[in-house]
Image: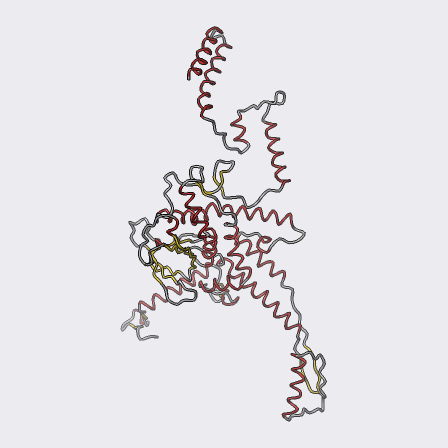
Length: 495
């Protein structure tokens, strides 16, 4: 009971009434919230008496330093963070403007990419953003050394002198926009950045000099979900399985010994006798000697058993693959004898990566970076926008395909298209039963662009076709039809 707890002088019902200070009430409420959350997550049971995190050795709250340590030291943890980013940026897209790649915007972009290795920096930023809750790209501008002030516009791609990806541990978010009327409400305004590796000092940096990236966002605009968070417990299990197995194997290879004296034998208790026994035992344990010749002593080695960790290991990796969306064979590498299944997993994974490119990498990283550079005057403005990737059959722009179909798969697709075209044609004449434009749509091809001349002739074709139908119905005489055609041809010739 602290001195801040007070008992009422005349409590109701004759019972002692205890009141708590505000700080104690806040601490009590926080504890209750944590207990409720733990129960909701299944971390506590039996009325809160059993805490699974404590029993199984899992951390209740995970800090950025713990995520960083996992990424740095645990092999599969690093792959979980790196693989999505590495495959996303494996084949960077080209940029175009109105279908052209020789515009001032495209040329300035190409110069910047070549000089600063932009896509390598964006790939690193993607990886860094997955370790913690966010990552920050610091954009260094020529002739403007005060990083705490709002960035001034510069002219041309030479205005950017460096790109430095920073993790949550190196770029601490200090302030966010509090003005509810601002379009940047809730977004970062200032960071404290450690520029030197291992440096304890920080430098204030204004948001206009950065690109803030958060992966796996839910209800927050600035904080994402670390890629290791959902599988952290399973990674802890793998540490126990792999490390424990290795340690058990090592100990079993050099088993312990029980040394007992024979009946009616007395040890030489002198210092010299003790040293001799100790030297012989250490020579056996640490040297090359495999025999102990000690009078009056029995040596009994301990035998141990090392369990096969494979079943438990596979269960943990299966759960990691399910949570991360990375197929198990892709996560661990293709296995011999399973090439067909591994190829199918690779196709599935590349489909996931393509979705990630479209929904995260392009809008949040690539376009966010380009938009920031245009606002700074580094890249020319694009009034009609710009396109990312190559124009596909569906008439939309896509990043380069990561998976290339084999010749057998391409032949199968061509055979299916040929069969579809055959079914769309008259079996006797071979002519299409539908228009060519409709056939292209059914086969997944974009409409064929009409030339300017075809656009002018098409209306005349329709008029001539209507006139021909009226002649066939007897509504227009052949003389009038011939005169009509002559007049139309004269108009075309005159033009």
